[in-house]
View (cartoon, rainbow, N blue to C red):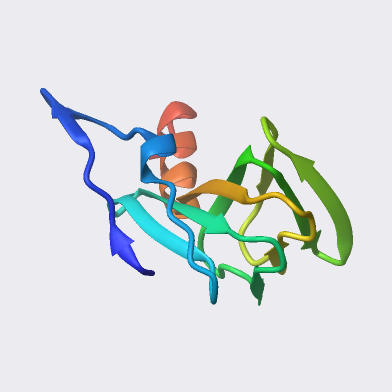
Length: 130
């Protein structure tokens, strides 16, 4: 990760201007941590044309990727997916995926990861199991 972004604090909430946080570098994609807690965290990633995040998976965390600008080409569990700006992709933990900017325009994504143990504990509590 390249840096941690500063949000505006209002009471107990933080507000992040994602467009103001965009940053690009010619040699690699730029990532900025927005926030991280035990339950939830988020980053913004900015890609020049041709840049990418390598294939990887998250053994514990579920993930949602929002495409804010441009188009993200992704391989998700062996399936090619083209995700235009304004779209979101959600997938469970331990699913191999990558992000590639194959277009001529810049691409900006924001991702949010959730620890599935937190989700399971909340579901158990709602169902009276916890």
